[in-house]
Image 1 (cartoon, rainbow, N blue to C red):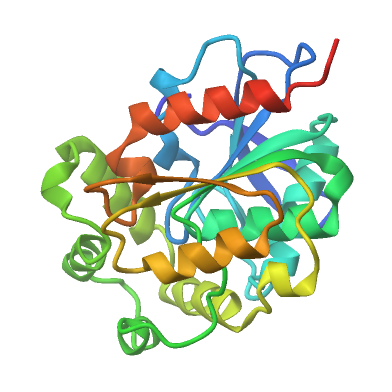
Image 2: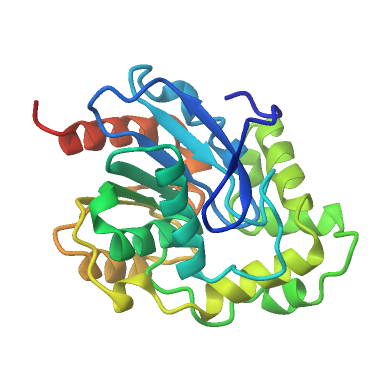
Length: 271
């Protein structure tokens, strides 16, 4: 799972082709399926992976429109994105898995848990919202994007999510590279799809064991939104990382990996 290699190409029953990285082999413990955030890719887990125990089976895939996945003109609502994830689980013939969703990847993970509860052994929602409807401050800028997307704008956009000085330079460059792979039309389509979708927890009930992880200084999602998410998922556990912003995955990879491993062990099937 090195950042930069092309991974395994996989055609999904939903009609798109994506790229998948895998580490380890299923052995009865739940697989971890990593779902990246908006304008990122499976490479965004590069800082997390070295901290995850080697015995775990880990899968990272590009969501449609991102990374090495197909970029169709439509299909970026949360229900369609969730259907892609279920098709991925089918294509890999995975038993119920723990879905680890970063930011909007956690939004998609919630929808998978609502639509296909038998495929989900647990959820880890890192910096995830309960409701993405609305118009964030950067909406006008996204809707005005044209090709080629300006690298300086992308760096400023990423800097609005966290203090980039807190992250290794190579990782910031990776974030910018991934975001620049999205054509302007896909930026707009993915943004519209996420912000007009019905929140998963309003469409149904998440019954899977759930761990919510948030940053204590997350100004994008906000503590109130995290409180609402925890309240909307029966029995959800919540861990807040003090001094951490919205990008929990990027800012606290070692701590997040430890919490994921502990949670996944509790979700393992009894032998």
